[in-house]
Image 1 (cartoon, helix red, strand yellow):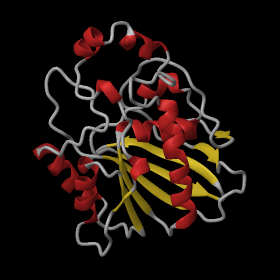
Image 2 (spheres, rainbow, N blue to C red):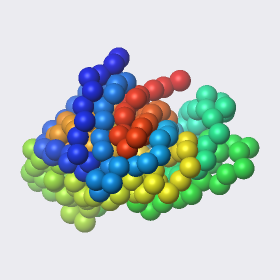
Image 3 (cartoon, rainbow, N blue to C red):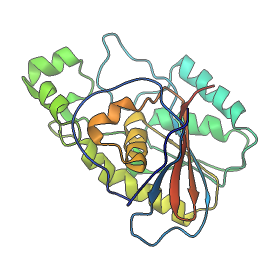
Image 4 (cartoon, rainbow, N blue to C red):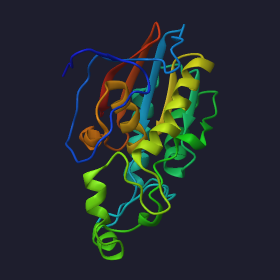
Length: 238
């Protein structure tokens, strides 16, 4: 569905704390380039989440654990490659984690372009929580899971990052990609990375971050027009 238009000063994401929803919208949400010197070129960024990984039951916290795609994830990546087959990407960029690199390599297909891994696009670092279930986190770190829910933007697990930290890591790299490359661009990253970028562009408070759905191998479309960043589609599936 279409959303209302919103224009913000870049990098002015609002922060705060809790949980969220399901499928989302397409719309015209706008954002100016962070340094104030508006982008002079226009183009499109196709932003994907990697394909499915083999998650255990009960689910575990997976941030920078380096897990591969499962068979369904490989199928999803092949289907998305077919869907995007007619787009002549000028550049393909990916998180260095193998689930994203595998997805990007499949999407590159027969194109004469090699995906470029960028360390800044790695998923949020969950520190001591990596690989643990919610129950294990509650037992090992009493009260900490609840504290995270109270301030999702700023809570930092032991040895890890907050979503605010993640924003400071990933937002400059997207500006750099837009400034230094021809269009269109394909970026393969993670649910956390994508949500932080999309929330920042739409000026959503980070307490509502998890209300932005990011299914496995979903497609988000961001257009830059005369220095304004527009979110045209979120969580498109095929």
